[in-house]
Length: 326
Ligand code: PB1
Image 1 (tube, rainbow, N blue to C red):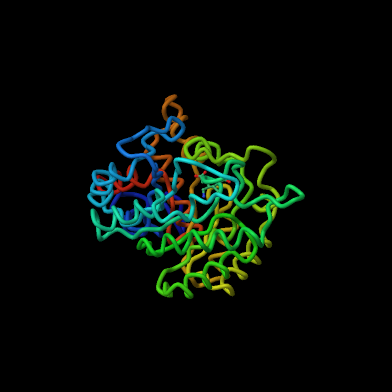
Image 2: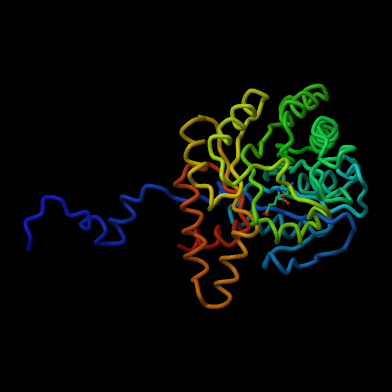
């Protein structure tokens, strides 16, 4: 045998040694499960592009909530699918809308769940943009702030623990913080989508939520995938405006950004493994090209290793089951 002082393979020799020195682990409690909430009653509609996920009516949430909790998941992220849309996205702040009603139902069915409500207009607008159009056709940043704040207050009024502004409007965190505090919701936290990129990986979500922009794209407000320094600037602004948690989205293609944000900020950082990231692994597995469990857990471990405290993922239920059975 060669006389080597260092043999890193000594600590890979057995499963026990590998477990002993493993540097990062996933916990179900760190995983956040997205839910799509229908305004209409009595429906569960499977989402073809997001296998295993469905659009659910409020009155069809109890069993899903029980399953989520039985798997050791503790947090859900709600997206509303209104019965009607308009140019201002007014269903977003309707107290009888899908998200406030879902918050109320989940609060009663599963009081132990942490409920995060996404705050954006794209699911609620006829044009599909995350804000309202200006006279010049771009999204009117400052006019949108007041509407986002109105929606956030509606979700806080319904009992949300956290609101998550995903519209990528400048000043959205400050506007929402101010509105929540003025409405007596100083204890409702803000998870800001700080570094949200104009990504090509959102397609399955847009199909699930009917939220694709009817014209143009989101490059006038979401970040350029080529930019990393800018993400730190966005995060610093969100911290200054009152964000309680930060986020990088998507995750897999942005682990460098996640690591830089982790190293720069001490607060909780979430990463969003988006619909396209999920669909890629799921589709390859369906074709027998990848082992879904191994590939999904490897992708989530990489996101955790890069610095995410919380991971929003469409694999949350599956991963919780795999981790339990590991
Ligand atoms: O899983 C996903 O693809 C998330 C998509 C994300 C939800 N917050 C948005 C992406 C987009 O359509 O631009 C919706 C924007 N508010």
